[in-house]
Image (cartoon, rainbow, N blue to C red):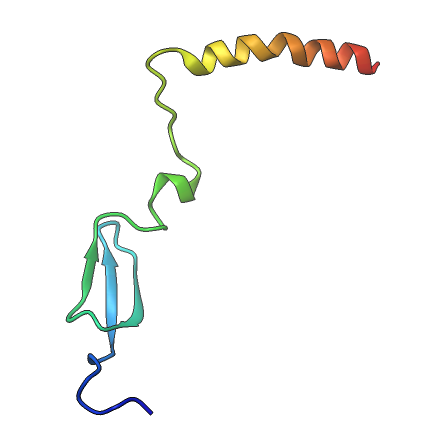
Length: 77
């Protein structure tokens, strides 16, 4: 049993995202929470993440290891 008068009030709140997604949870936060981005619309969780490569590092990496992967495949046969 918690002591009376020393703990914050723990109520049900609604978390709303800018994409329209919402869910109910419990928190000591006063009022509803409004998010800009959630797990339903975040690119990392949806698989629509775009890789920004300005210096060509990814392409250089792929070229470097493309030859070693081809060599391993030939050696395995």
